[in-house]
Length: 342
Image (cartoon, rainbow, N blue to C red; front, side):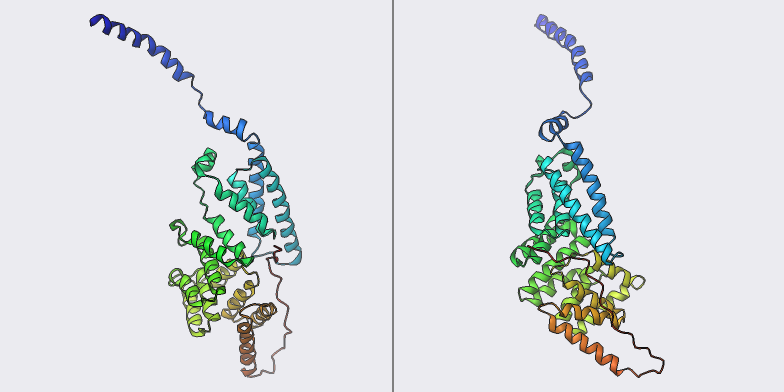
């Protein structure tokens, strides 16, 4: 027994230095990452460089939506979205399962007016299991809800209301999105789709909880839905409460929210802008926006014309001043969103 114990001790003692040398010789980097980059994703470095540039370009284009509204700026922005889309299509060929490439491609293609390409990329991004993604993608804990929100908007613009409602509800139910602009966008898409299905009370209820005591984009959407439902007093009260909650930069916040929201259907942008202009007593601008909205075949065209008639009646009722100068109505600025071609 003692002899056996001595032999075991000697073996363990002799093995210790060898084990220490092995531990010391282990590489400091993750061998899995080397395998991923050299075998499964050999173009990783090139794709990372393309993603960095495309993300910066998209951020700059989105940031300019609130200021650059002239025709030249619109054309330049459209061209940028098309160019970025082409670059990301190439990046997808190099790395077909790169979630970041797929999400950016969905964003760029949507902005470039290519909804089918955008949906294909976003669906592909959601199909990639998180555990099979590269380590940097897994550790970033990227939230898929932004893709779901964008998909809801695309389906809504395509007139596929059932799909729009499904993806909007999927995004809205995530607690991580509560009280964020992205959550507001999903709520607005959901409310718009439900209203187009003919259930305006449910569409209003979708926005009530979020918009009750906050000056948010969802509150503005609630004002729009109340106005469309002929609840003019409730719409005015909600807008006034929103102004009181954020009186310092009320106009700037609303116009910035409108500029950065991807409207579905696109002509709704004019309805929202008209509501904001009326709240700011910008009568001429509001009238132009209402007439622009009414030029489309929309479900709420008659309501827009009612606003025009009310503005004209209020203008005629004002006492004339000898110093009043008649200013001709100017056409509204062009929409920052192009019509899509399915």
